[in-house]
Length: 249
Image 1 (cartoon, rainbow, N blue to C red):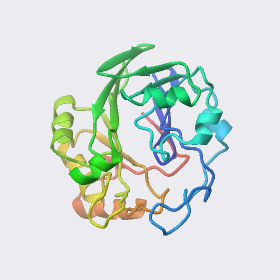
Image 2 (image 1 turned 30 degrees about the horizontal axis):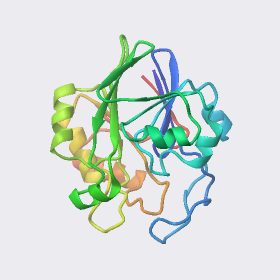
Image 3 (image 1 turned 135 degrees about the vertical axis):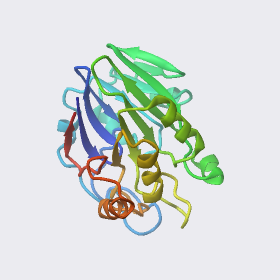
Image 4 (image 1 turned 90 degrees about the vertical axis):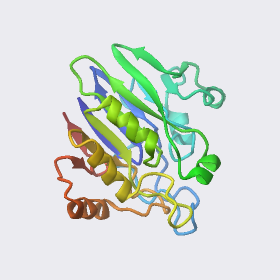
């Protein structure tokens, strides 16, 4: 099984002999407006051409429809008949974008021997979560493969802690940049919350992504590693891949 971080929450995953992508965001560097007035976005280019990102992709897994997760360029370049999985309520907008093979994940679905289970998230504290709307995460499982929990755009809160304790995933993928529109109120996990994930699941490998891409990100890869070292979290447990890096399990 391989996970290649493209950028932000975009992953190319080879799992159970299938190749799929998560939250395809392909916009060129500085092509979009600032989010908090600091810089145009994204802050970095893709590590490879968009055509390479999408080559051989059989399916796309969409956590939610914010433009930093499923942008207009990805919608233009993905085949209209590709298999798309999304949370209930997002299918209408995806259909309007020209896609025809859409399946909402209410609980769990099976795809080529892979079980895909949708999980919930909280995109910030109670006030911000209401503003940001519904988001999903997904648990992936298959015979002879590690179980993956992709948490998605969420903070760490009691329901996620309970989910991790109950499901005991082999790999947990977190969005860990502490992205924030308002100081002190991150809308996804920050360094401290990512450490809570590691401590809650000491036997799991945690992969921190969604970093160093937007002007509202507050935690860098260097920051996160320094926090982990100070907290006694080993590098073998917390992986912080660079854009373009491939992890093999």
